[in-house]
Length: 145
Picture 1 (cartoon, rainbow, N blue to C red):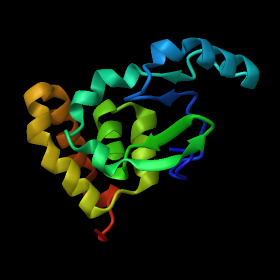
Picture 2 (picture 1 turned 60 degrees about the horizontal axis):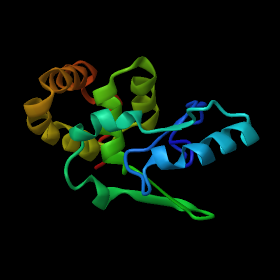
Picture 3 (picture 1 turned 180 degrees about the horizontal axis):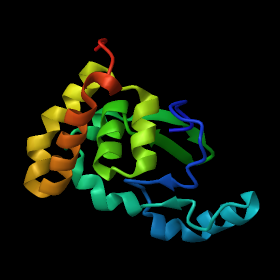
Picture 4 (picture 1 turned 135 degrees about the vertical axis):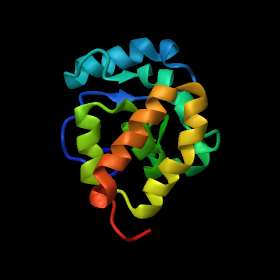
């Protein structure tokens, strides 16, 4: 989110939904980078994978290239999917991030279109998102789409 310019706060880590090779095979390199750059040992982690089922199956088609860093190719979730994940997490900092991102009406519509699918696997998450969107109304979205 920082690299995309959506937020400027320190997130403390980077989340990996998918990695090839798996992060577990890269652990030594991840620890070396952490030591060299004085980062937390878990600065790169795949804990977010527990929530990847909330993403639509086609989320990879909306990923955005961040860049190439040596042999590392980095992509990030598209805005719509990122907003969806932030709303699913529903932590105060995630909601702050959504507010700062100022989702468009189209982005909010995308999230709303995913609620039935999400409800099949995580009804509580779907309900929380629905209630949040209802409570905030158009405060977090602009009229552009």
